[in-house]
Image 1: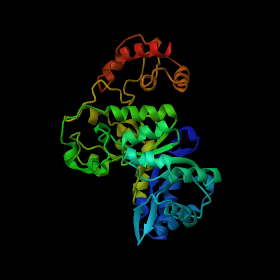
Image 2 (image 1 turned 90 degrees about the vertical axis):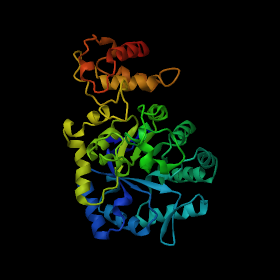
Image 3 (image 1 turned 90 degrees about the horizontal axis):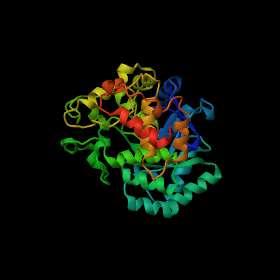
Image 4 (image 1 turned 180 degrees about the vertical axis):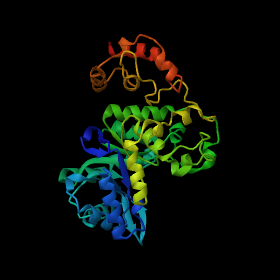
Length: 383
């Protein structure tokens, strides 16, 4: 299992993680078996958005078999259990009660991430940042009941505002190649409407590109939900690319995006858990999503580096995908951030060493003018 650092928090997480949906409707024994399989496969990161006390207790008992340092929990604020059903709430009394129940139900003294649940409107985010919810999250952090503050959303505009605030360390965001082509919206339902994707695309939406770069520059980690677009990407008849992607390709695409620390799947049984974890050990051919994206009749990624690595090997050993990534990060602001410059400086070989042979261009599925990008990077970073 690949281990990644959760941005500026320093928390180490498994690149493949689980959301709690897969535990719904399961017995305690079934949940324990799923947790044991996940842990055996190296999955050590679990999202618990549900306020369902049965699910919380089942998963908590299963995790109690392990030392607390062996797993990471992303626990949600602002969910509540009323009349046997999930509900989202911003009423601070209910938020407090539900979070305390999360800890008691799961037999925990703390969770690593206190995730402010489901905010897709910038107006609502402003109210959260200025109100009781954020104050409570900070209080929990001071008490040691959470280690950092997160926010879940489907809207890139909300992500950008959250990053700018400096208050949010981790963002749970819907990520996949179909969503990346859609402009920001406060209406989450459009992500699941088939007619949304029945149009001509012009590649990744600029706001999504900015979102990834701003998060990575600020050290704000992304944890991914909806990697399969609700199954749309796995069905060739529905996919906007005209061809189905495999679950492994979807997960790899997400892990290749800047700032992404983990992809969280709703695996429903032990077989699905093993299959998701196997992505980290799969060969390059099984993970290669570039042919589907590059050949899509209704999408355009031409000229845009997707950091897929097909340009390698370089004749002079430049890590081209990394240089392109740092170039994109370095050009979103008026000056190159010190952290980006430092990462670039640490590369064994730099863009200025490019001999312009063009071999990388011939291998690139997206038609990127790589020598031109190397010249641009050399000018930007000074070597």
